[in-house]
Image 1 (cartoon, protein in one colour):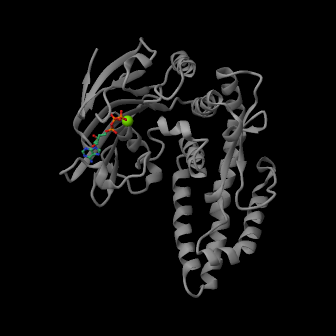
Image 2 (cartoon, protein in one colour):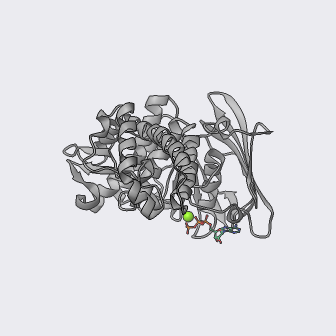
Image 3 (cartoon, protein in one colour):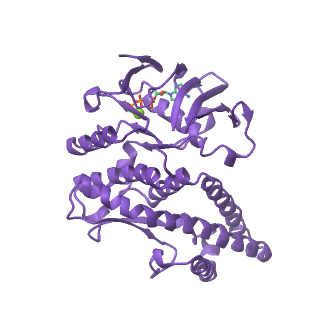
Length: 372
Ligand SMILES: Nc1ncnc2c1ncn2[C@@H]1O[C@H](COP(=O)(O)OP(=O)(O)OP(=O)(O)O)[C@@H](O)[C@H]1O
Ligand SMILES: [Mg+2]
């Protein structure tokens, strides 16, 4: 998968940029606040339509302008497509080959990107929502329709919470929402567990090659809406539905008292372990970083091995967050892959240990220039 051309208008501090990226390595150097992350964010938006950081539409549009327009030409296995997202103050419009896209599931999957940024280094220390985001994005890359499934689930939660908050509960309506929660919730849990099944061996192998083969790295599903949860890998679809149904029954008094849904995949977490010890509390700083790097690299390997394509990689200033050894490993990995397009930002070009198949750019005050 290649992004062959990119064109941006009035996106954040980038008034205009147009270039044809290198099929392998594109390195963007610039001081703080010049637009490096903005550039990667634009590529991410062309893939997922929303940003990797929570944003209003307004904040994505260059100050004093009404509309931002992002456009890319994507090649996948020789087939070219034009993706376009225009962002107005009240909403976004999405186009594929210049035709408006009515159903986003027709658009998702056209461009696959994996982003790795400074916040990701904290992924194991931060709140469960960050690890849910990791797994859901990883699944989205493999199964683009998953974004629609998670959105339907979020919409359902809003409606169900409104019923729980209301003065007198409409029991018939709540029954309908419970049934939907069991179905949509099981869909999400089943996908996450299925993903982990395939992902865990890749993760362990990657961790061992980065760090040390005396450690077993693992990432397991952590149900947070039931006590004494059974092992996720052993559950069937029917089991998951039954567990959700039981938990909804027993949690009703609590849900009613708190006015929101406490049962379901929106509560769940992932547990990262090294030799069965939790990374969050036991691992050294270096092991912690190696684990996160392994999660990202394993995600790429997983897509390549299971689905046979190389996603586009967006590396936002990660070299400044990794220690020297981990940084060297990352670039060895990138260099040794046969293909795969990469966009890298940095404040210090020296961190980027690449010299072949590369175009260097500078970014200053939102202006992108080729510099070699
Ligand atoms: N809607 C907008 N219109 C104009 N400028 C904006 C808009 N949104 C953000 N900016 C500007 O973009 C700049 C930030 O860009 P960005 O986050 O890409 O910086 P960066 O080069 O990644 O910096 P760092 O190295 O600190 O991460 C800031 O100067 C900010 O004021
Ligand atoms: Mg930045």
